[in-house]
Image 1: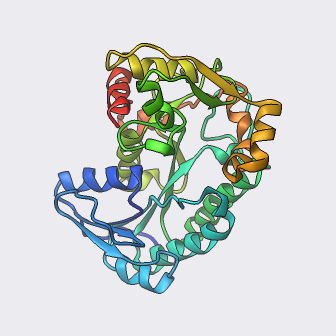
Image 2: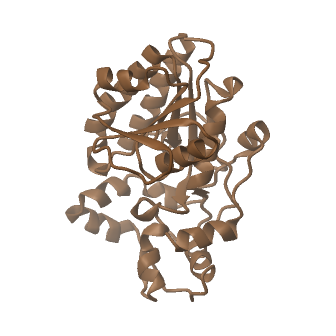
Length: 311
């Protein structure tokens, strides 16, 4: 599928942090925006329509995408332990809907496909993950890229590091501990808390995804969301607290044998343990390519921290 569709209609699949911000950005500029979720829950964003459907139903999703300029994959299956079951049919339906409708397929990606890395992550790194979550995410992009190269659709993926910013809540390693830390309580974070780690503002992810989708020259590859300089987990949390006048709290580290023991009784921690390498060494995102292509820089860190603190 080549060319462009003369429409300003957009279909956003998923109403998590990225989906809500994508929908808000598009609505603010006057676009025709529909958000698809299983429940059809109203996001409260003025001017945005909402549709209830199972996005893994290719026919239903294709009908919803008919006439759309862009199909945004902002889905985030809520049960982290069920990704291998939920993602394949969902991803297949999204590809089918994009191909049938002619919409640009814009994917919210992450850094899992790279696996453990040495040095800053750039977009030309191979997708070399061996853990099952990383292999799954790499396959989703590989399938979309193959369809793009075959001329069946136009695809682009924007990859971000761990989210901070408004509305992230339990989806973020920092934001999930902010409520307890705001009450002065000590908190526990996975892995080492003294290693530099990139944190990406969720609204910057939305800005980059929208920019990449509307730029035909950006299609057929991945891009990294412009993000602030890396901070350690403890530094990031301390900055968030300081942004609203709160004192630092004690930060404990859950790693090694303690993480393995906790994972025995927690399915979620068993999943996260496979990704613990991300917190055991520097995990830094390089974003020069996207900054140059789209003219986007990250939201100032102090503003990100204030919005993270306020939820």
